[in-house]
Image (cartoon, rainbow, N blue to C red; front, side, top):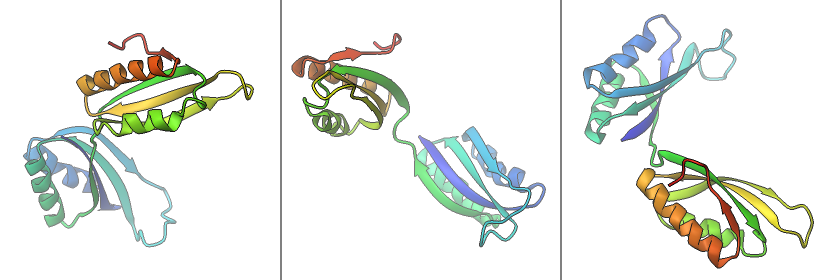
Length: 170
């Protein structure tokens, strides 16, 4: 399971290493670290602290142990959030996208429970002319993304839309 963990560290040397020790101890996979450090701390209420975002890949019970160990070291865990969607793809739909109810298309994707539309860019040249929409879709995994793409192909056929997929799409 991939998890984002936001923590708050004292703005002192060695604090990041201290926070990462439980990650190593419990053998979690560290995907990324974003350490936002200002030279002058002007954020109200931060009082010499910095926020760090850790992205980890580990079993759920290990995440809980890492959190407990980090907190036992006096480090505040601000938020833990599971990343449900791991695969991303952008597709383009061309035709009368608006007139064929783009909301319905998005709702059908989001309603699967395995994927969701996270971004959309729409181009409408003239009121009666075909429109185009670029949809960014996130899915739980590759197999689920492929199932949603199959569904999108059916929707495109049903609504007489041209569906353009990336070259690496199955």
